[in-house]
Length: 230
Ligand SMILES: Nc1ncnc2c1ncn2[C@@H]1O[C@H](COP(=O)(O)OP(=O)(O)OP(=O)(O)O)[C@@H](O)[C@H]1O
Image 1 (cartoon, helix red, strand yellow):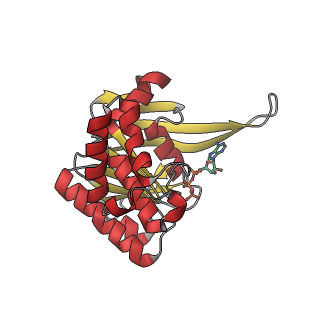
Image 2: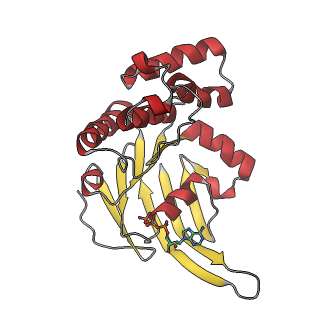
């Protein structure tokens, strides 16, 4: 479902003539099978977010290939990658990334508008999804009128609404208290089990790392070999 081949990435900083090259990922290769949850761990600065940004297409690698669901996405141009993202990828971020001026309903509905789904279909699918995350009664609330856990459930509903085969998550429980964290992790496991969604999750939280069928550790931009496979 996800194949990373010899992926390397460098950032170039500074003005022309005084540039510094920062190698961040060095020759990374791994596979994630359909229906797997793989967690990526590593110390701060080890390259986890950079890896996720590359898989998401928000930045382009210096070298290497990324295949998602049978498509070599590193060959897609910006516009094609944007289309691909809407069809195939769901995102969960630590900061939820909800639109503050939109209600829970409108936030969840948004990807369907981008996809060109009719208004009637959108209403039906959005309500169904809000029911699934147990927030139907909160559909008219704005993000500021919801708790952290509820906001994260809205963001998950928004990620799920287009039925993506792959969900990419960046510290999904980073802003939640431990009780809310546990219920969110249970929910991720349930989605994986019931819907067969493949998850790639980056975290430095042990509890989150443990929900992975497999954990990959990054150190200084390389995969640490011999990490325990759960
Ligand atoms: N846009 C950028 N320009 C220059 N350097 C960058 C940029 N983004 C990240 N870096 C550098 O790349 C390295 C890896 O950063 P990255 O955010 O991928 O690490 P991380 O493992 O996700 O860290 P954390 O757990 O703290 O979020 C760091 O040294 C960082 O300073």
